[in-house]
Amino acid sequence: MDNFANGTREMARILARVTEGGAMTIAGGGDTAAALAGFGLEKAVRHVSTGGGASLEFLEGKVLPGVAALTSA
Image (cartoon, rainbow, N blue to C red; front, side, top):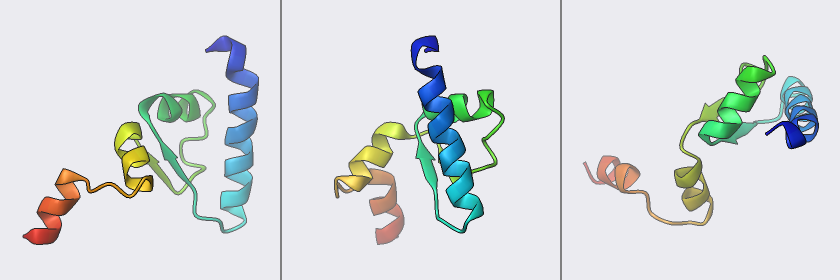
């Protein structure tokens, strides 16, 4: 969204800077991935996931069905 582009760009630049400094950075969500690509910074973080909802559920401590299936196999 154009109204938030400056803030999003600055956050992306901060992520890029801390990644260069050795931090493990993960960006989650299709809109976030698109924004990083739009700024030319998609390679500036360690990992980009298009699964924003799944990322949030993982951070909440919920069991993800795909991970559970792999774990029990």
